[in-house]
Length: 220
Image 1: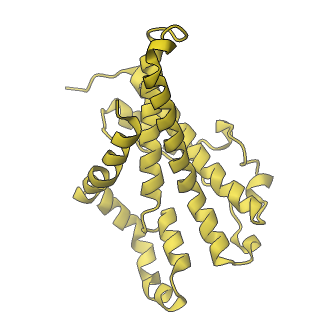
Image 2: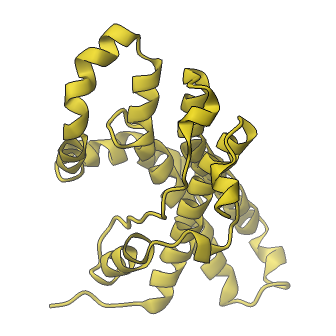
Image 3: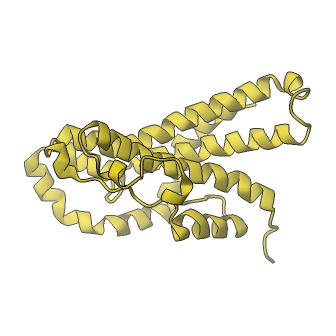
């Protein structure tokens, strides 16, 4: 039996997901620009215009299919922004800052979303006079999903697994002799990531890190 399909719930999940992945990529490009690499700016990617960032498969088809299937986890991604690391003068701290920018932006969005959720929830009796009775709970759900999605994206991308941002950061910060030893493992990063996602490791990641933070941000 197919799971029930609620288009409103799907939109409440996909809208913050799209915004989250776009902000993630723009943050990479913006920090690279501030540190001396204009590649993303010249490509027109320092914009929140979704048309410039949407990847048809990763931004639309994949999250929509997961939502329709009733999946408990909605994934998605935008087109990566172009970064020319040679413009950063091969500075390891600059490259690490660019790599960390996306996750940092998502974690900031999670805090903002949780704050807005608490404001709407706390002042719900006042807001009912300003927001229609049907809109108020939808806004609460929207910002709750935004907080959850950005927490997952932020911390997930910080995992020290290539090709995630955390893998790049780890590689950049390690001493050269250790980087040489782990370099042969890097091509296996995608398979390690798949293993992580489809084993109890991901459940542990959600249970011990994401769930407590979600409860902190959007508890009633």
